[in-house]
Length: 92
Image (cartoon, rainbow, N blue to C red; front, side, top):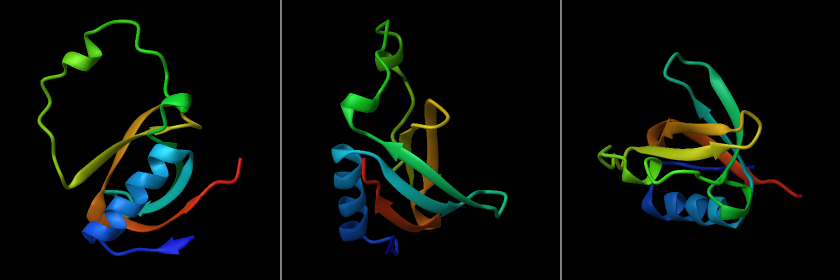
């Protein structure tokens, strides 16, 4: 695991790792609990979208929140960048 603070360099390092494969990210949930999530932004692990409705989302981009695909829950989840504790790439 790599200790992290919210900086652009660390954010970019984590985003690059997420695009490469599955990463375990530890963060503090809104309720104060720590969560370790195996997640990704790698297309090989993402579900196939069956309709264009999902891509036409009207949701505004929020730079303080990151959406990722949780490979264990098989769904999209998110965290606040300020709450990231550490991350590490999973060896598959």
